[in-house]
Image 1 (cartoon, rainbow, N blue to C red):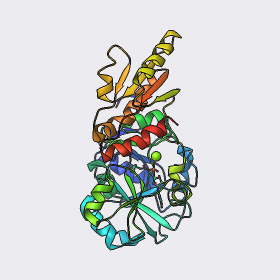
Image 2: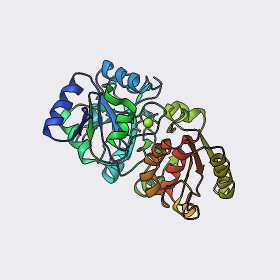
Image 3: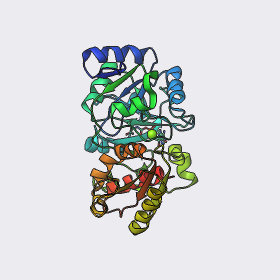
Image 4: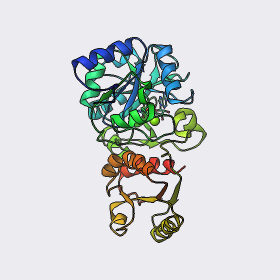
Length: 329
Ligand code: TXA
Ligand code: MG
């Protein structure tokens, strides 16, 4: 990898070094099928403190613990039938479940909540890393707090440079938006953060699924939802799905004042904007999820980002819309 001395392909050699770092409570970034994670030993207060410090993350926004496929959940949390059915159906995969904690991992992971979020990623490189290290790995997305989540090793490098001892490179993440966070502590599962595993999919397995309602209750249950997220480092303006013409006029005004703007919109809209700087987000939820974060980072090559909202036509697009709107503040 030439100049990037801390970016490593995943093999026995790099895993051996990663294992050393994790066991010495240092941070290792690793790929998952959603976004890259900034991993540390979840059993160590020191290691977990380091993650919050490196990201500049508010200390009341809890972390997800990542486990390998065959891990014994009952070591960490009070398991239940609901989650067992969902695990059979969806894991490994982009579904994080929130349980009552047994208090085995560092209390800093859950910021003093009595719950613990667990996720078993399906990415082969992630599984290899988690099996090799054989420790519960607490990992937020591997971006500086508030910035766009990373979907390549270079994105992680852009945010942290050489401050991380190691970035494991597993290629571009396919999923593209973070895992669905699902509270399974009650009788009915409750979605705290929308993602690639949708309410319909969950309903089809366990018969019911609710969305947490925005507001105080949700803020208490999933503090992360309260903070500003996913912001590209470029001024931005958002237009409605029916305001394409207005967006184009605004683009023209910026051009006339010597700016170099870019428009982020669906394929359908992009096709009518030939000749302008456009980033094409795709048309279906899955494609938009896959492209969103790379698109937001690409927008940083311009000096103004113009977003055009899209009509949500499938459930994954709902999760994309959530991040899209947050990116525009
Ligand atoms: O796909 C993902 O989930 C990625 C990859 C790296 O696994 N991770 C990720 O982590 O998105 P992060 O830290 O950016 O987001 C974690 C989310 C936050 O919204 C947080 O509030 C929620 O999970 N969370 C963590 N522990 C929780 C808990 N005990 N109760 C409720 N929500 C929790
Ligand atoms: Mg994040």
